[in-house]
Length: 249
Image 1 (cartoon, rainbow, N blue to C red):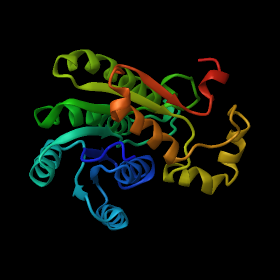
Image 2 (cartoon, rainbow, N blue to C red):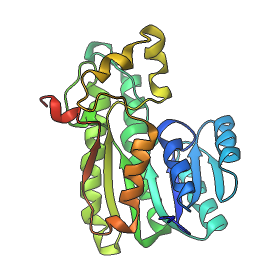
Image 3 (spheres, one colour):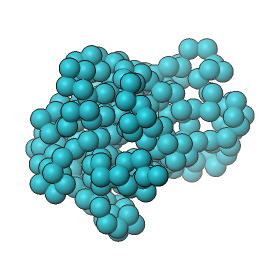
Image 4 (cartoon, rainbow, N blue to C red):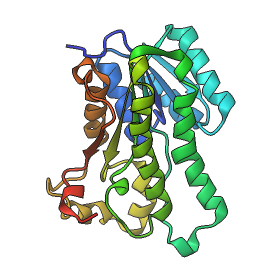
């Protein structure tokens, strides 16, 4: 059974990592998928991999004109929007003494402001009974070293989903967030170059004894976006193999 048949889903950051995994799974489950990202080459590659029922739009979530272009092109191409996955984000481990105003603004602009206005500018285009899923992080739940900026942006995303679920309930729009734990994506490439065993070491800290995959997050996003979750709004779903449950906050 294709659970998203005839649905139209937008995935920001849909050309890499978790976003690409979500886009691929949604497409497999029958959705018409729009992927949005900054890198034209990886957008084209993903579009060719998925084949039909796919639209790739290049842009930056921090630019209002790019977001408006995304929604206008989606409306023109598919006629509606049923699902919005606000996934685009960046991560950098920084000790508080190493945080410059430029680095602070860069991360906040993408991880919080960008997600906020990704939703804001989508509202005129979203159908009633549509679903919005914001991608946060377990860093919003637990406390890690050198994560003061990143973690606080993701905490803001979790709280944002809860507030938006109230604000948009009268439009029958559901809003939830997903907090991934350690997921094997290109976001860890730099750290793996310095320490090839970095993720392997983390497996011992995870109760399920494995690093997650984009498919793990895609499965959660599919559930929250489907009719099976029609009575679920305002929740943050931790998908981390039990990592956050095994650590003090």
